[in-house]
Length: 404
Ligand SMILES: [Fe+2]
Image (cartoon, rainbow, N blue to C red; front, side):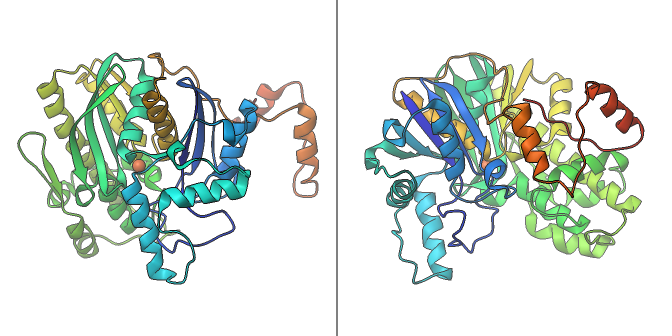
């Protein structure tokens, strides 16, 4: 039983149909699952060289099929990482900018058509499915956690008109407890603030890294105007207050400008606010459900400072974070949801490794690739790779390391 999960946009790499911000679609990926086991997975950006690619992940799908030695016609189910309603809404959105576009305003038909163009096989519509974005996040974490039961928190910027899901995972079942609307998005809360620190979408981790250099106290009260915590783990974020208030209160940093202590302090307050809200939500659900374990996914779950505090707080006995918590992980979740529906759930075992993408091939292939860049870089072969890397690092160099 083969299921292919896809995450990304509904146009191809050389097309530009969607004049909508890539807040909605990014981190394209494909994941191939056989009988509930991942056999190949890769993010499209690694292959088309566009960071956070928001295109249909054709190259990633091609890689997955060739890694498994199968054709598209042999795939039992192709699962897309968002609901059909949301995907159709994305297409209707496109009409605003391109009223003459001659494509079906039917996401299933479009996926079918695009795959047929690329792979020469027209899949029957019954073999193409759409899954809830946050369910996909949730499953991507829970199915890999090895937990028999746990609380699951999928938390991100937005997707499928929502910004989060709270659920309980039990065996192969996911029971939804609550959803979080887009206007209460914790991902947007972070993003809206970092705009005034010279950053934008996908830069959130840099501000998380800046936060420990600051003190949350000076702007704590100011940030308390941006959110409210109430009974039953409920909260409210006031996204509309952030910009006007920060404009009045801080020296806005433009990209490339030096950091002042104020920028570091604002980062610290932002990080503290996020952690306070997340602890508030999770404390409630920990108590209300009695669940002692937690799974996290969704872009906000890449905030490892927050995750570390959750882990060391002892609120949960064990926490599993999906390594691909960003939307690429939804391709995994979509494939696993489809596989489960077809009677092949993922085995309940803890994820051991994520090396599911293409490797570097032989030393010879690496050398050929490097030779193609002659004139731009020097290279040498050494038996003392670790020693040389250590020397460079000791000398202040930043190194990249690729292996396998
Ligand atoms: Fe997401």
